[in-house]
Image (cartoon, rainbow, N blue to C red; front, side, top):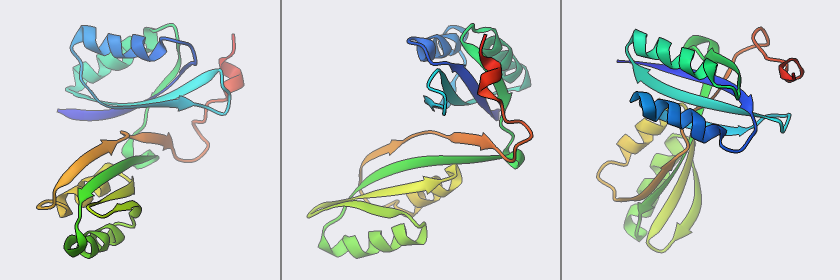
Length: 170
């Protein structure tokens, strides 16, 4: 199974995310990660989708997405030509004795402690998926109370393939 990261520019209309996720559900495709947010122009939303499958499935996903009326642009974000980031919040059980050790682990990954309570810490980490996964691996043996991961947000490097949002207008 391969993974591909797709970046979509879509009309910022109600139901667009439902139509995209519905396409995946109807065809039995899996979404590994999906993030969405408005662009510099509030008429458009940038959606980053990570999907997995063989070459045929991934090609079909791209073709089917491009047929949706709200989709204005779609492209693959290839790893060597793109920057990916993910945000994770990790709530870890941490009494007085464990707190210093957990904070040391967070520091190694340049993560931030954003909340401290007598019995827990919340760690915020931003980076690529492998960095987030590595932090979680280092926390094995600790009790993770809650975990929230945003999924990948990505952009292509440089200015070669930047889509001018004004060109998308009808």
